[in-house]
Length: 410
Image 1 (tube, rainbow, N blue to C red):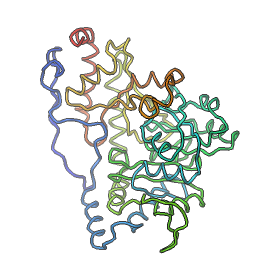
Image 2: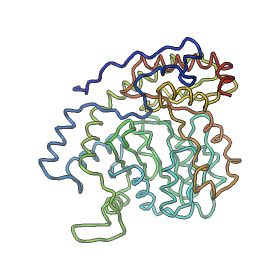
Image 3: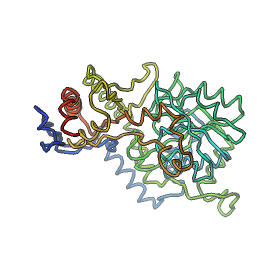
Image 4: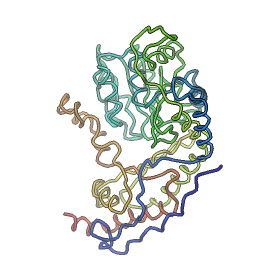
């Protein structure tokens, strides 16, 4: 596969007693820092060949051949007629919001990356936050309908951690209220439900191809849809509203994906099966290594559906583990593993939404619970089974010595 070779990772430093923990002055377990979301970089020779071809052509942007090829392949994986590539996932969201004519209020979960809410607010739309399901961290359909008012123009569900929303229930709510559904599918490229790609649900879905994603273009995004009129409008809007060489027919911005990003994207598509196999290996290894640790549980993916295993997420029950999530976060980070509290503190606790809706946390109890318990662990090509075993061993050690650790920290 002509993968970019990497030097073997150093064997992590084991802990024998709590004085060995880096948080108490010991040597960090990992000499080379491990990051959640470190970019998957492989296929370097093919990437460089595409870049050389791009440079030889002098075609660097404005719907070049690499972007058009990338869009065709994205649409094929998404199972849609159209894919409109953009310079970022957030720009894709903003274009889709404007293209669908959304206004006033849109319902979405607070348990998502802040861009989901910001894209709405930037376009003059007020985010209305609904609570999530305990089962999958996605928006709870039962919480949507009570929030619908005459000002509600759409529903913006988010496929969190690559787990698919209850698309059937959401579609039925949207049908009853005659409103569109726009899916934020930033985490879910290549994911299916019931044998159908998640790109085919709703009026449109938005992907992110940021460097940290399962499939990436270094930076970028795309909107996928079967709506011919919407696709035509989006293509014009992402290019200043042009409809032809000199004919501007509407308001637009510069939201185009450059050719070099498409070069990354096409190469990432070629490596997708390899990355998926490594992600699945890592996921299975985490499941094995974390089994039996009190208070530690992980998300599980439905065997009948295809996942990209982009995120390995654990939930920490502080009472059962003896340590809360934030203490474990501090402890692991000190050891050289930069785990993330996705999505702390929740959109509703971030500005400007915190000031707009004081007291909203009371009606988001499951979101409040998740933001204090969830931790995302490293996966992808940058971590090995040996490192996974060491990280899980560190978690097991911390839980086993929770009383001593808690006493020293406090």
